[in-house]
Length: 585
Image (cartoon, rainbow, N blue to C red; front, side, top):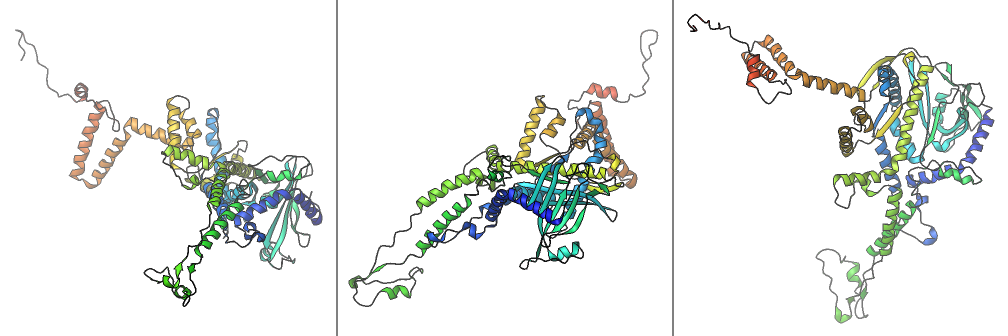
């Protein structure tokens, strides 16, 4: 049960001390992503240098985010052959989840800075290495509203309990105008420089036999903006906190007397190379400084002191202008001296080459951006490309788990909330729009969803198709299993129906029959002699092909005149009559 505002703020602060090493690491990594100058600065005691801030942290992170954001997503309920007859019954459950998530997607993108679910969660996975989601179905003006929020794991604190979480707190900042609009009567204080208000969302489910509670606290005044209340779905209280916190990459939390262990959990994409980005910037700064020094190197002139100084010849005229002639009088001791030796950056470049190798191991190899410095067949390029993108696998798995939880939570709350029958819109697994009416009674939330997210790579599809064909021909897999295993289609049942229809048309000759019927309908309207000629020609060919043992689509290519003759109509010619004497007349 939630306590006073001061008690909840204190509890959140104590948990923040526990996660401080993890949050500090997250802050360091995000500063690298932003390109903060103070992170990449060369210490002042080393002198003044031309400065380069590498964009590698941002470019590589964005590359992974884009790869996951625009990947194909297949969300479905897998069932065994024994339960195949239940597939139609599960359609309502599947489409309800897809429709509710589609509505959440639409609402999220209504915000000027909003993003779709997949892109938003992908960003937090890559930048923070963890995902925190809150989902609650509610009814507003007789409309179904999926209240979804993706929280920053850095600002989330939690206590695990018997029902997954017994307490969750999330610190967020909102502009004072937003707070005034959402919480009528608020008269607190905002930060003078930013105009932001620090808020704390708190959720509690710690008391056995009690339902979950939620509240919102203004941290500046230590008062509740939203007093603690029951967490409800359409007036039905929940006995758990509808929040999901997950990590994939990194070590599990090793509990011992070392409080720093927590920073090795929830590793982001940048964690591997966190200490290398600043070294890269420093090496590039050294090279740039040397290049600038060489570009500004002075022209050295020898002069024995006789006559006027030759420096004026160079001071007023740029010697590098094409076609310009500057005469030096050697009799007066005027001559160009040897130039200053150029800076030797060979050792810097050697170090940079070694650093690139380390960056490629912990991050993205240039192959991931299409930069291949060797001649390879397509299969070899695919192998290198997949190896280069191996560092996104953990985030891909985490994103798949997010959608499994969201789909499961959507149908669970829809059934639990006992909503009226709703018309739900969305897109099915084949990207076809659907509109269905779903009653909570038709929802079966005992089945587990599966989500597969795969980038849409043409050569990947070709490789999977080849592997599937080989598995089917060798008898290792059935066609149905191969379609699921290699993700050839998004909806296996729908595809099987299409294949069956095509096979029926092929075996029954429906294609040619339908074409003939179309010509007949056209002739009935136009009475065109050309159309009549085509009908007669098509009918004759159809009869001939049928007589040959084929059909309109797959004719028998070996005509048999005996078969044709046996199927042709016979003329009514009288048979000869034998008369006495042995002569036929």
